[in-house]
Image (cartoon, rainbow, N blue to C red; front, side, top):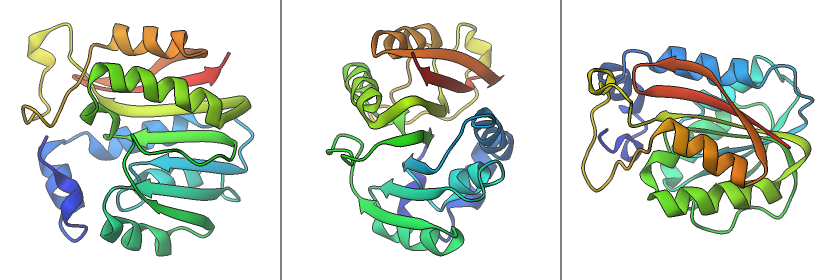
Length: 194
């Protein structure tokens, strides 16, 4: 997948052209947050705020901390959201906020991490997600059937892993993960704190 995060003006057009199921993916992530009691949300790789808007459909009173490595994306996202308590220009490998969140979400960001760094992030997220908290991830995976590999991958930048590995790493980190949506090589995983 090309690096969409550099230009907030063209991000949505480009990603929708390359991922026809993008809007469905975002909707599925929002739906996977339903049923949780959510006051505070941490959005990792917030981009232009699409994921936060999907979450707001189910949690209209939630406040958000949004993190993205590109400050111009955060500048685009923040005004779209009614209650942003903090914007963080940073990388997923940087320190996460010390606060507790009932919900952490991430769409199309974690696949940029190498496998061991994904595992480390999941362990760190367990500390950030409060009691009875939830982590929802929408991302690209390495599918079991090569015919399902439809998402354009840029070698060295996009580092997807297999779904069974992601689920095992989430379990090892103290989550109870469940696949809630799938389209070819795109998945949504809901992981409640065990």
